[in-house]
Structures are given as structure tokens and as C-alpha cells.
Image: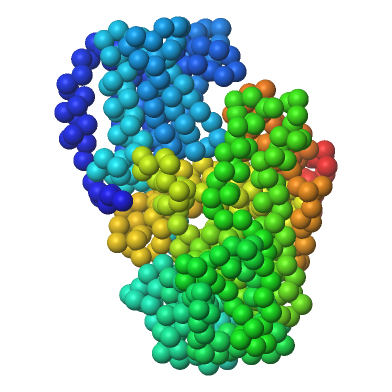
Length: 604
């Protein structure tokens, strides 16, 4: 992957623009398009948008270094598209110079966010060459030696979102270190494991040389480290990768002893090892040097959770897209949805996390891994922590959870999403993080008062998973982010979110600090997230809940009355001119705030 540049170098693009006839671009600018700081318009063109819902729509398309923007010119039909270039997965030419048929010549654009776009252009004079070249280069900047937009934007926010998560602060919040668990900086230079963070929590009894020997027996050197500890019973969630058992059934005494140290930390009779994979896959991984913990791990029990791999998840989402875009398959909807297996995968992920949370609640420590410990492992640990710890159900706590379990522990965002990369057929692409956010949404539906944040936050996170506007989800691990100065040269998504938190707050939130959530992972209780997967269909777009709308109106009314009350209190305490012959007795109670309150009747 090409390295992003700290300064946007558009010389090659400028020279290309100058070689294109300005007349052919028909540059009558869409002047009222609101651009981001650092965003520059590159090309405008008259096109026909082949709308899957309304048919061909004439209009203009504007391409900037951040987005593709289309607006219809028909007075009868208003259509706008605003697509971050980072959300584009594939750009192809449609038809040729000799193609017959109306609107058969143009561009086909496949997006990563559950929609496709098709534009028709005039066939004369290779009219699509310039727009295709610009779009292809700007949508896949790393494939063309250009920077991601996150390195170009000049956006400024009051809060620095990079300060939301600090590893030591989060460990202290959990009550660490203590007499059973210690903090190690053995990975300070990413020498132990290049995909792990620099700050790790490990058993107090373990020595640094133990960690080195265990790393040699774990895939990618991703040793078992603490993710979360229960305040009362001291049971822990530990995450790692698979052991390197191989076909010959290798053993590693240090690894076995290390897992027993984890068990002894809270005197758990048996350490439960949750292997996220189907058992067949775990056995097959032995052929490539991997495997699973066998009977030699005494005082441990192994449970397979049957969650499929990244390739199965990718194909499942493709099938889902086929039945929801552009048109929803109405005639056989339930059977079509079932055939995608998407909700079935959601159920298995949620069910696995519930088992982890239940075991920890009962006082038993658990170890979670899949193959390399950065996909299904992150899903399971973060969802279990969301169920167990109400802090992660607050707005800022949820930001910390994502930073901690996904970003710092090396979920391969660059590989799974393909930021700025033209290789749309890359087998590493997979919607693992989308699946996690879907599981969170399912939990918010079952527990509508337990989460401080709302659905809009989840949608914003997924939109910016692709957009490349912020540095939050760029690259595969902390080491790579340090090498590319992400925290210095880009803006965090949390900077934007925390600058307008009112947009993302759930009005029904009721804090219950010690409440453990126990969602139901049953197909009867799971729903397709229509507001995300089918949001581009104007006929199915959901409206805001009328109950939530009314509640927000009442909150606004309450704020208005409180403001009036505050003004009256201030006017009451303001100094008045001294009156001759006045007495020193206190003023009458008739002007107290309570007496003013009686004049305001609220609708509550």
C-alpha cells in the first residue's frame, strides 16, 4: 500500500486538468455546494443519472477530491447524490463508442455502502474519458500515489478526539494494576507483536521472558492479554490468537503455564476458552500451522462458537445487497432474506458474546480467540464488554470501546475496507466491523433505554468507516498509524462527534450503572436494519419515531421554560435604586423564583 503524503500534491492532477478543454467540461459551477475545508472541486459535467427508482434524470455531477455530488436539473424531479469517494469500491466504463441504445454509454460505480450508481454521457468525442480518469484516481488515491483525503482536510474542532482513549486511563478505570494483574511495556517498540498496542495487561506472576516464549507459540505473536476485568468477582476477558499446534500436535509448556496463571488470578476452577471458529475450520487450520488448545491444557475447557470466516461474511453481505438494492424482493422477501444467512451470522456472533458475558458474570475467567485474533475475537470481546459494563454504553464510553478493542488491538481496517485501494476483488475485504455495529443496533432495539447514544451515531460511524475523511479507521494497526503520523496529521472522527453530541444522544437513556444486559439471540427477536441496508430506497426510508419526535419537542419546551425562569431569577437579584426612608427588612417573598414559576404552566 502506498504511503499517504502529509501535503496534498495535486500537480499531476492540475496538469491533467489543464490538458482538458474547459468547454468540454461545461464548467458552470454548482456554486451552492457546501465543501469541507481543504476540499477542492476538480471537474463538473452534464450527465444523465440512471436512477433505479425514477428512471433517467438529467443533471450535473461535481467531482472533488473528497466526493461525487450530483444534482438534477429537472424542475419536476429533485434528485441529489452526495457520495464520499472513499465509499466507492469499483468504477467501470459502460458501453463503447459504437454502443446502440439510449443511455448505454457511461460509467458504472459500485459503492461499499449498499448502493450502485450509473451515469450516462454523450458518445461524441470520448466525453467520459476525463471524468473516468479523475474519478478513478481520486477514488483510489493510494493506488495512484496520492494522499487519502484525511491528510488533506483542514477541518478544525475544539476537542481533540485523539485524546478520547488513553490505554492507561482505561486500565485504571477498571482498577488495574492490582495484585493479580500488572501492566507491561514490553511491546513499546512493537518488538513483541507488531499488531498489538504498546500497553498490555498480563498476569502479575508472568515474567517478560515468559511473554516472549508464549509469543513464539501464538499466531502473529498475539499473546493472551487482558481486555476487561469484573470489579466484584475479578473474572477477566482475555484475548489472543490461535496456538501454533500444527499437524504434528506441538506443545508449549510456557503457553500452558501462562493460561493457568490467567485461571489462578481469580481462582477460577476452569478457564473457559471460546474459539470463535467452527470446529471443522479449527481442525483445518492445523494444516497451515495453526490449531486449538487440546487436552494438554489442564483446568481448561474449549468451546467452539461456529462463527464463519471473513469470506463467508463477505458473500453473505453481497447476497443481502442483491435483494435490497435497487429494489426490495417483495414476492419472496422472507425466504430471500433467509437465503443470505446475514441474520443467522448476526445471531451467532451475538450468541457467542452472550456466552462470554454470562460466564464472566458467574465468576469464571474466559479466553477468546479465532485464527489471528483481530476479527471475530474483536466482535466477541467488545460485545461482551458492552453487555457487562455500562460505561461502554455511554457516548464516550462507546468511543473508548471501539478505540480499544478494534483500533488499538489491530483489526485490519485497511485490508477489510480497502481504503483508497482499487483492488475491489481483494479477498481480504470483509464487513466484520459492519457486523459488529449491526449487533450493537440489535441490542439498542432490545434495550432502548440502556444506551446513551442513538442510531444516528451508528450510521455516522459506518459512513465514516468508508469516507476517508477522518484518520480513525485508517490502516491495520497502531504501528502502521504511528508510521504514517495519523494522530498528528489527521482529524479523529470523535472530534466531530463530540463537537455536536446533541445529535447523537438517545432521549430515552436511563443510566443504570450496575445493569448487565442479556439480549436474546433468537431469529424471532432479530431484525434487518432497514435504516442502514435499505436507506437508499426513497420508498422505504424510515421516518423518525413519532414518540421520539414528541419527546424531543417536550425537551425543547422544557429548556425554553428553564431559560425564562433563569432570566426571571437574574432580574430578581439585580440591584435596585435605594429608596429614601426604606427599612432594612428583607424584601417581600412575592418576588421569589417560586412565585414566578406559578405563572408558567408546562404541558408535562
